Length: 290
Ligand SMILES: [Ca+2]
Ligand SMILES: [Ca+2]
Ligand SMILES: [Ca+2]
Image 1 (cartoon, protein in one colour):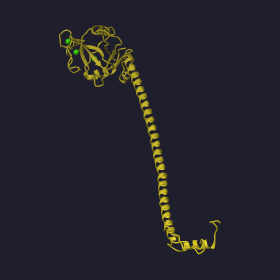
Image 2 (tube, rainbow, N blue to C red):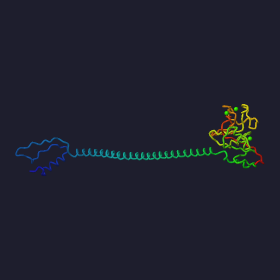
Image 3 (cartoon, rainbow, N blue to C red):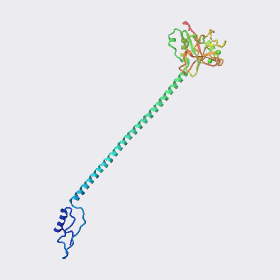
Image 4 (cartoon, rainbow, N blue to C red):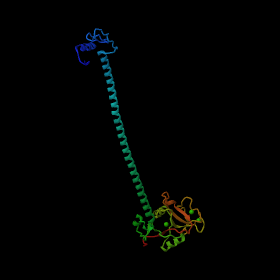
């Protein structure tokens, strides 16, 4: 006989289980008997059953599902947002890196350009210095005064107030310089005014220590300076501290250096007459002189 077969009696038992809320005792079925001996009633261990417990379980499960759902949503949202946030941060960092790289490249480029410009400037300054140094006095252009005057100076001589001046291309000691000038019908320059001094100064090229003999000496009597024509020197355009006869210095020269602070009216020095230097000749002219 099969125990799984449904019968009206079993259906009745099941319905009773379902319907009798809280029931935990089965009644003896009148159909279940063994012989003539009555069967003792079956005692079943009490247990919660029925719609009430199902409802409670359903509520608990629903709550659990809700909690799980909320947790899943929260976790999903968190993990969804986190990668986005970090992705944006990464993008931002990459952007900043790119900007930094571009800035560094710009700085490097500017530094290179700056270096090149400095090199160009140095080259130009060197060229300019070379030109100034190699610019011999004889190539100095005549001043407007010379071109406007009626007096015509020889080639390489420059006119100022009826005198022509030569800045020599040669070096001589002081006496040799005077001899050279005399051979040109001239003498070492006699400079009597600030205007004449400034005119001559402007003809001189700048250099490290460009010095030019002119027509004064105290060779006869120490510290009694005379012009080449024996006239006494009055005043003059001495540098501060000069003349000082530092090493038996009896002849005068004009110094024009690269130092722009040096000025025409403070440029005379006394020096040993035997030094070989370029010099300044002066030739007095008149309107009828060739
Ligand atoms: Ca003069
Ligand atoms: Ca002296
Ligand atoms: Ca001196």
